Length: 205
Image 1 (cartoon, rainbow, N blue to C red):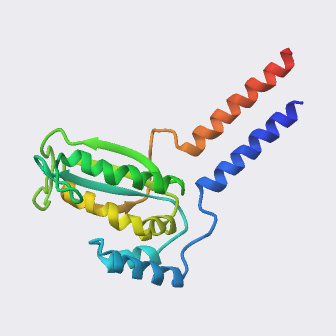
Image 2 (image 1 turned 180 degrees about the vertical axis):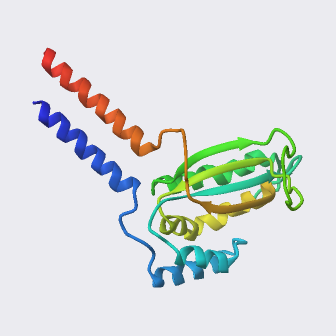
Image 3 (image 1 turned 30 degrees about the vertical axis):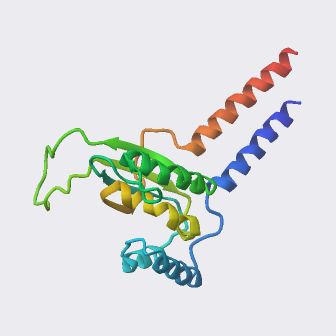
């Protein structure tokens, strides 16, 4: 029956949306206090005043973290084994497990770019810090970010990041425009196409 196909597609999309979008609302005051204490214990190098302000202004919606970083040059000591290792390998030891962790909470990469040259245009700007890599990561909510950062294994992973990078900055942003199809729209389109195909097959058979 064709209606069964479309109901199945609708249910599947509903399940996806329940996973992809935050359904718990903004952070509570108690949650904020807890996560700030966790951040203090982790010694992540973040400005806790800025972090608290960001959490207190939580609107319950998704956001994108803008990461700017520069890898160290040459090989550096592995923080665990002491073996000389390329920084790119060390950052992958941090990045891969961390991305698996946030993917469980609908976090995912959005964009990554490598710098090709110096500044082409600048007005009244401070000295160029010289970041070589830009990466954007989507978080389902501020709560999900803090849950990931508070995990005990994150402190272990953080040493790989510290060993690999000569400098880094990260700040939250709100996506205003993108010409790339967002995952929730892509999933809706895929389910629509599959349901249409399944319906046509049932009509032929």
